[in-house]
Image (tube, rainbow, N blue to C red; front, top):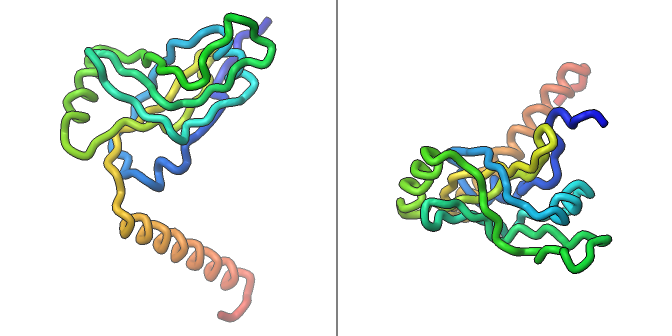
Length: 159
């Protein structure tokens, strides 16, 4: 059987980019049980309530929901158990220094398979205020209107 190549997205946390200013990102491996991998291969996971924390020079992922494998038996996993992330020691130390700063948190952005191995993209982020969110929405709407106006102009329509 041929080995998997490339990146296959399982779940993404689009709300995280709306709620946080993302400052830095890392790709981390996950320590998973066999039934979790099978459940992920079916494309079933949610990152909405997920976050990561540094505990004793290790990074742990909390709140990520990977449902139980339907054909699993007594070896099935708990759906929201905490999972260890695999990072280099230097990366963990850098994350630990930054998370101790006020206002920073670690949020998962995407869960995917890269070359057959489960990976999670975590981000060092600072929470947005509500006016920042409104400003980002208004900016996106203005850009969309600009693009539509340019498209109409190229087609020969008058504004």
